[in-house]
Length: 252
Image (spheres, rainbow, N blue to C red):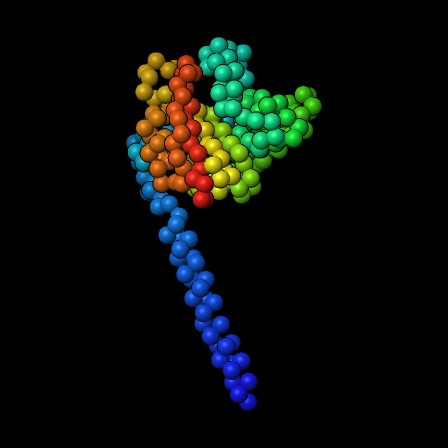
């Protein structure tokens, strides 16, 4: 009788304590998450923007797959000195790299050769037509270490804690949900993994790009401040773009 009573008491305590423990864990996780700055919506806005503002900046329209030819234009190397970017990032053979908003695969294929057969390039894009272009190039160049990924506006669909470096070339300013996507990007990074923003310099009026498709370094730093990232460096060796590098905090 005493044994039965004791077991009943233990069961009752477990029933009470487990939900309390789960609630405490959830509350701690909620407190640990970075606070989301609000989005604003304005009727009057730049025609190249979507009328949605984040931390004072208007979000740009996503470039359509119909503009893929501009990404692969022959003069891109001369204008942007693209061949200088990847060597400066010190990517190693065997690394797992994500090329976010991979587009036509301009950098994706170059990354695939850098990381080699033991490495991998994850290539998320919103547009299946862009992924089709990448697959055709993979086949033509016999590259098997690229994974095209059809992502969503809020989720790049990357493996948690599995990525050494995330590269965003002229794409972050087009995210309709920059806060939500950045949360997922940080989750995908390994401890001390890097996230690299390459954005056209808004500080320079001579950069011949539409205003909402450019960003200042100050704005990028502001938008990353809520997240567990440390600003490592800003490199300005390219003629038109910032290269702004962050590192994931080791404890996250």
